[in-house]
Image (cartoon, rainbow, N blue to C red; front, side, top):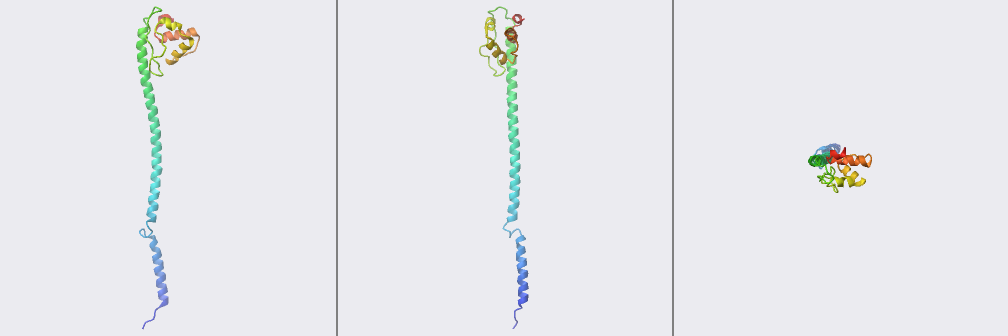
Amino acid sequence: MEQPDFPLAVRSLETLTEQVARCQNLPATDGGLRLAQALEGIRNDMRNEMRTVNRKLDDLDRKMDGLDRKVQDLDRRMTVAERNGVARMENSSAMRPDAGLAPLFSLETGVEIPGCPSTMDEAGALSSRDVDRILRQLGASTAGSVQERRRRLLLAFGVATRAV
């Protein structure tokens, strides 16, 4: 009857232990840990890229909003310039103090300037403060004496005969 070879059994167990320990290097036996770590790294990279893309989209949205405001402002100013040009042509024939004046429109708001004088007499009777307010709405200078500002206002209305 054969007897067990204990040293051989010990060596065999050591070999088995060594080989079983190497099994942790197999993707299927590491519980998918390396795969999960790789996926987590990819996920983090994707999050960072998405944050970058979102920041850039936010910047682009802000720039587009600014551009939209500028286009609207330009459109309003062009419309006002056209309306005021027509009003100036109408007003250019005003000679008498009671002659009617077509109202002008504000570059800032695009609507008729409140308190616009309806006659040349009314334009001459405006307070210095009202003259400045209307000039500002037209984008004109408010520098100079009251007389210079009134002259500038009449010119802005298209009334050249009374302004000179």
